[in-house]
Each structure stands twice: as structure tokens, then as C-alpha cells.
Length: 638
Ligand code: C2E
Ligand code: CA
Ligand code: CA
Image (cartoon, rainbow, N blue to C red; front, top):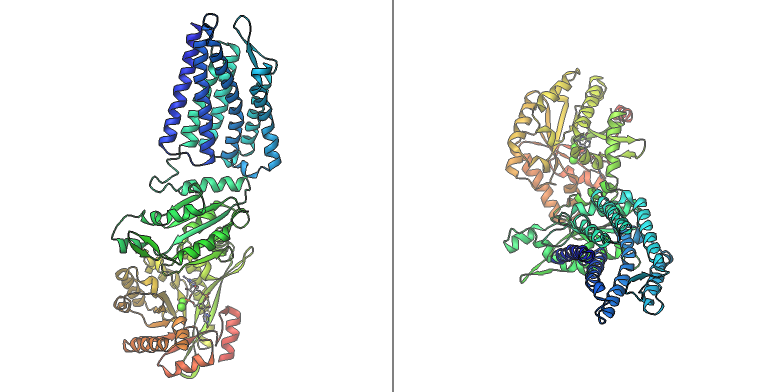
């Protein structure tokens, strides 16, 4: 009965571990070091339980069948040889999963593997010295003097694994922690049960069960891997980067954003969004192994470089740049892909996952050609988190300040008005410019408060009567288009202005051309409503967007502000001159007044005098300046 029961215990362990093996291989989870260690642990449990079954059958036969002896001895021998490797493997496995393995020095590794080698040598020599076990003259299994050493070594590795888990607790996600703790508990329970009752062969059974737990919670990565490409996803990136950060592991990250991925759909006529991954995957895998590639968005890939001595992030970025300058062969077609490549060092330059995802999700202009951005170019992305805090702080602590830049009549260069331009003075980050914080404020929904603040400041200024006294006809206030389209916007604006004793026609709102493209019908209602209340309107940055001419000119603007790029372009080439000249002619024929921005030099001024524009704005006259300086400025002008 006893031996039948032993057999059943081993058989159960065998079936469980073989099942885990089958699932691991059918899911192709075999290429990472972690997977390989797991498979080795499974192999040990499979072989050990097989040996166990042979021993359970063979031992009772020993006194009768002489030839059973070598078989049983061999089964016991392989059992001990393999089993001595299980705990060290588990220790290695935990150190990989926790991420601490990457930080061990060669010396530490050598010390850690010492007990393993000692016990293995003792076991391998057992046929000669019988240190571990032997069969006595009554055919009974007998423990050798050194068998306790094997248990001690196993206990030592177990203890070290627990310590690893303790130190990397925060670096491991919940599910994995649970699986590893489960592993500890169930294996220890198995050992104790077997210790208390030699008849219950619980040890291997417990190990098989514990390995199954690891398979389900650690090895199973269906929620982390894309089935088609085999690349890891955002969730995996977050998890792994968090692990590197907590452990302070220095790794390089290279983020690759293909800016014209839609071209693939256009040339292939296929709606399959995975085509991009299919085209570039072979190349990416030739740089880093599959399991260090993450596809976070359909057109964004992140490569993790762990072995920085062999190849660092900047080298990889350079390789990618060179490759993306050439075409990609796909189904007989040559496709040229443009990519923005960002190279950053984790822990040094990138210190949290929030910034990481700002980088990963940053929007690339679809006209971007292939280029590399290093951390200094990524400052605006890397300091995005800080920036959000600065905006909130600015609103709380009155850190925003309105600057004014004067505008002039071309005719006689007489003072005409001013544009209100906001600045943020932050105690931590210093003076911040709107190009950086306005887009962020728009995304986090704080633009409304900023624009309201600016409008109130302008109203207060106008109410004082000072600007009007020195010849300012109106002050331009920038509006965010997103906000204009919100219901109740017109009432909201009127409500603010009516709190002050200000003539509405002294306020001139600006909306940029490029954004104005989104929703003309709504926008046109808003513009005409505000105009009915007496406000003026200007279209900003004309020439930077690619909007539909008919739609933008159907909006009831008083002034069109021609962007500085058109002026500067006109200085450079004949083509630029034709574009500027004809834009001005066209807008003039439509009866709108024209302001040209970005006038910096006397030459530009002379050129504009030849063309029929109305107003000028630019550093040639003045940079945007604080209100008190502005007052001094206009006093002098008068
Ligand atoms: P914008 O409306 O096109 O403002 C003109 C920008 O051009 C200003 O930059 C101004 O300093 C700059 N500029 C003016 N003349 C010259 C010149 O001769 N040469 C050069 N190189 N630059 C010149 P600023 O103040 O940094 O503002 C950037 C943008 O931020 C503005 O572009 C506007 O779109 C936005 N912005 C500024 N204040 C506000 C605001 O209160 N609300 C909203 N929603 N947006 C604002
Ligand atoms: Ca403006
Ligand atoms: Ca502008």
C-alpha cells in the first residue's frame, strides 16, 4: 500500500509538470532567460517524478529481483543530482523576475553558486563515497552523512530567494508577488509534510503545483504580448520600466515613432494596422531580442537596451536613423517611412513612468522627416509632469503675467494697439513661455482659466484708461479654439468683460487659422455672436495651416494676421515673395485688413511698405514687455 501511495504522489507530480511543459511550449514562451529557467525547473520536476515512480516500483522488488538494484540506484542518483539544482534555479528565477539579476557582479554570482557546486560534486561522487545515500544489506534506503548538506543548501537558496523578494517587493507587480509567495508557502508545506511522514511524498507534488502557479501568474503573458507580432505592449512596458526604476537599473530606451504610417495603408490598399509592425519587426529584432521590444501604439515602438557596454541607446538610435533613410520592401513595393527616434537614459534622464508615457504618446507631425531626438530635445516632454504642476501652481499663486507687444500702422508707423501674451513665472522652473505651457494647459483642461485670467488683466488695463490715453485703439487677446466651441462660451466672455467698464470694441480676439479648421459652422456662430456684442476678431497665424480657404474666409474676421514664416520666406526666395504678395492681394480684395507679424528688420519693413498691408508687429518695434514697461513705451511713442 505504501509504495502504491508513493507512486500515486509521483505520478500526480509528473502529470502536473508535464501539463505545464506542454502549455509552455505550445504558447512559445521559450525565448527569454526567465522562460528557459522556468522550463529547466519543470524538466527537473518531470524527471524527478519519473525517477520517483521507478523507485516506488523498484524498491519493493529489490530483495527478490537482483537486477532491479542498478535501476533503482540510478533513479535515486538522477533524482538527487537534478533535485539539488532546483532551489538554485529558483533563486536565479526570482532574481530575474525581480530584476535584481542585472545588478549582480561576477563575484556575487560566483559566491551565490558555490553551495550549488559543492552539493552537486558530493552527489555526483555518491556512487563512490556514499555520502548522500546508499542501500544497506537489508535493501533499505539509508541516508548518508552529508545528505543534510543538500537540505541546508536548499534552505540557503530558499532564504536568499526570500531576501531577494523582500528587497525587490516594490519592483514586482502584485500578481507575480503572489505567485512567488505561493511558491514558497506550498513548497515549504510539501517539505514539512514529507518530513513529518516519510510515507507522504509531498515534496515533488508541491513543487509541481507551485510551478503551475508560476506558469499561470508569471509565465503566462497573454495580457502583455501582442499575439500577432510577439512584441510586448504598453502594460508590459510600464511594468518592466517600473521594475528598472525601482531597482535603479541603468538601461537605455529608444522610442521609435513612425510619422507617416498611414502611407502603408495607402500604397497597399489594406486596412490592416499591423502591417507596420510586420514590415519593421525583422529589423528591430536584429537589434534587440523580441522581448525587449514594446509596441505601445500602432506606430510607436520602444526598444530597451540592457547591455549598454555592447551597444548603447545612442548607437541604436543612429542605426535606426540610417535604416529609416532607406526604403522598406513590402510585397514588391518600396516604402519610405519617416521616423522620429528618441533616445533617453532611464534613471538618469527619465525618472518616472509618467514622463515615459508622455514621451511615448507625444504627437509627431506627419511631415516630420527621419531624425533623432536626444534628451535635451526631449526636455519639453521630460518636464511635462513638472510643467503640469507649474501651471496649477501658477493659477493658485498668481504666477501668470500678461506681457504686451505693440502693433503699428504701416502708414506713418503710428502706434495702433497691442497683443496680450501670457508668461508664467514659476518659483521652481523659472520663466516659462506659452509655446510650451499652452498646449499642455489645453490638454489638461486648464486653458480656460488661463485665458480668463488674461482677459481679466486686459479688461483691468483698459478700464484704467491708460492705453487709450496713449493711442492704443485695441488690445488683442488670444483664444483657444477648443474653448470657443464649448457651450455657453459667448455668455461667459461677455459676463467677464461686463464686470469691467470697458468698450467691447477695444478687445480684439485672435483665433489661429490651423485650429480653426475643426468645426467651422459652430465657430462661425460664435464669431458672429461675439461680433454682435461689439468685439473685434482676427485670424491668427495665417499661412501655417492648410485649411480650406473658402471655410476660413467665410468666418467674419476683421483682421488677418499673416504668420512670420510667410514674411521670412519672402525674404529668402522668389517663390516666397510670390506667396506673400499674392496672399496679401487676395486678403485685401476680400476687404479684410492685414497685419504682418515677425517684423524684425528694416529690410522687412521696407519690403512691406511696397505691399498694401495695414498693420505691423514684431521685435523691430518691441518684444512683448510687462505692463509697466509697456506704459513707459507707449508714453514715449506718443
Ligand atoms: P502668437 O499668437 O502667434 O503670438 C506671437 C508670438 O510671436 C509671440 O510669442 C511673440 O513673442 C512672437 N513674436 C512677435 N514678434 C516677433 C518677432 O519679430 N520675431 C520673433 N521671432 N517672434 C516674434 P509668445 O509670446 O511666445 O507666444 C507664443 C504663442 O502662445 C502665441 O503665438 C499664442 O498662440 C500663444 N499664446 C500666448 N498668450 C496666450 C494666451 O493668453 N492665451 C492663449 N490661448 N494662447 C496664448
Ligand atoms: Ca496671437
Ligand atoms: Ca501669430
